[in-house]
Image (cartoon, rainbow over all chains, first blue to last red; front, side):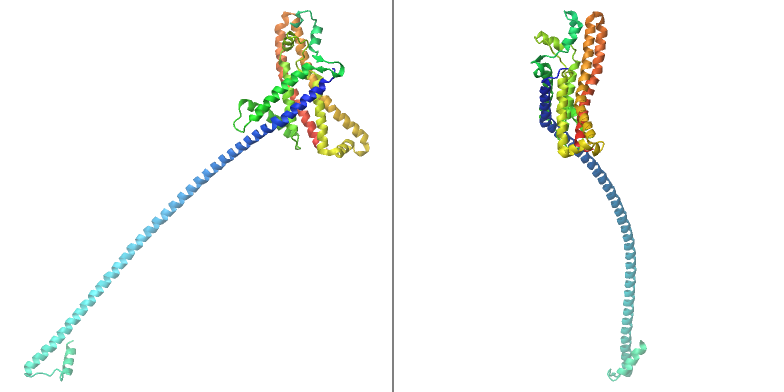
Amino acid sequence: MNINATLLGQAIWFALFIWLTMKYVWPPLQKAMQDRQKEIADGLAAGEKGRQELAEAAEKVNQELQNTKEQAMEIISQAEKRSGELVEEAKNHAKVEGERIVSAAKAEIEQEVNRAKEQLRTQVASLAIAGAEQILQKEIDANSHADMLKRLESELG
Amino acid sequence: MATAGSQTSGEYISHHLQNLHVGEGFWSLHLDTLIVSGLLGLIAFGGMMLLARKASSGIPSGAQNCVEMIVSVVNDQVKDTFHAKSDLVTPLAITIFVWVFLMNAMDLIPVDFLPLAASSAGVEYLKVVPTTDPNLTFGMSIAVFFIMIAMNLKFKGVRGLLKEALTVPFGKYLFPVNLLFRIIEDLAKPISLALRLFGNMYAGEMVFILLAVWMGASYWWVPAGAILSLGWALFHILIITLQAFVFMMLTVVYMSMASENH
């Protein structure tokens, strides 16, 4: 074992290689590896996020579908109810209308009857007057006999 | 094999354990250690640098994937052990792991290939595995030691470091003992780091050399020797990785101890 200046030379080589590694080898490699790690982590995170979003979207679609179904059911039931109501309303309406028509017709009939009665009365009165004129051969003064005529009329009514 | 010429076994072995060196005494240099380790480091870290420059956060290419895998394994270990914030520790750990692994892996090239090629090119000695040179392992571990002291000072300051050295573990009245313990503890770190790696790789290389010598003794031994060499090489794949990992891990642990208060 002979120790000599080779030791110093080796120490210099060693120092040179440490310096090379420290300056030119390790930093860029470390950066590349860290960047790649980050990229992979980001990619995985993005994938995970995408998957989560997909699941959320599916959930949402499901919910939306459910909602829509419920709404449709509601609308249908409302429509059914409404149609029932409409039918009922129309029935009522028709009934009322029919009654109104019937009552109007009755009233008209009554009026017609009354008018006919009135006419008849006046005609009867005038007939009676004419008859009485014929009988008395003398003109009856309508004014002087108004009271009597009125009484007659009302008795006829 | 190599002993077929005029070499004896002893010469063969000592030839294999001889560094290619220039200079005398302390100021001599082991050229083979310096060149092999330097080339491996330049190829590895230069390649990683080029790759890192083009690195993108998109789908990584094969080479980028491979480097990222190694780097992130090391980084995970660092993050598990070292909890303070530092831009130095992860690159330090990456450097140690990759470099030591590659240097250890030179062990898997059959022992005679490169020395024979070198000697045919006129180079007499060549010790291929740089981590079997204690100069390299001590060079690295002493550098780690100084970084550790710098870490201590950065996270604790001079006062904090002194207080810790004087009062841990026995309290302030036994400060000489505490200081002695601390010095021994801290000095043991680089020494154990360096000797562990050196010892493992040296012993492993030694086994390959001895197997080669054995096979050189007679052609009869070649099949058995080849199988044993293969087995040892396969086992060594584990050793070289483990030793690189242990050196890295202990360095990180020392940094972590330096950055945390007891």
